Image 1 (cartoon, one colour):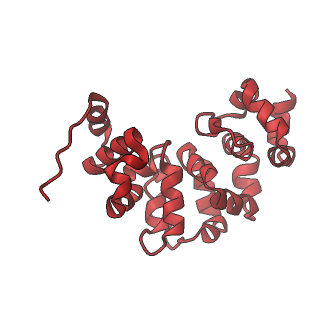
Image 2 (cartoon, helix red, strand yellow; image 1 turned 60 degrees about the vertical axis):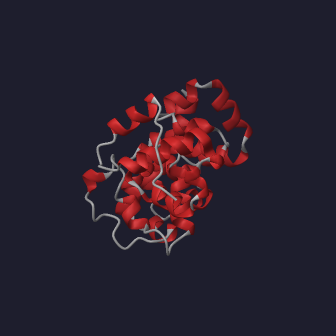
Length: 209
């Protein structure tokens, strides 16, 4: 079989140009995967799919980083969770070695520095909220109250994720959640989401305002 030929659309080329991590192929794979989904050659080639999920581009793409995190958590021999977590662009200020040695969701949840970094990163919270196992571990963490429960951005995303609303990936504050009538209706109708909201003084203050 000869080398693959990429026929790139304009938006694909723009995605590549925006990529500043030197990961041109992952940017192309992501564009192809978004366009064709399970019918894409990316999905059908297990090696390419794994490489895409492990890439910096996938870590920081809000549309697929949940899938990528789930892959990393469920394929420990094929991917390193600590390496994957260190690639979040808006969590790098905390230091690349922050997640060293954290290779399971449970280990991540019990590390206060790591939980703090995740709770301050909208991109990271999108990934965590998209993966049931990761969200469950985070909420059961002894550090949950200080790092996520009483902070506006993470608790808003958590409540929306528990209510099965896709808006968790776009809403970044409790104010935005409260102003979104469809989102609030879903949260109010979800016992799980309301339990999370009721347990957060920060969230209850925003809802009652």
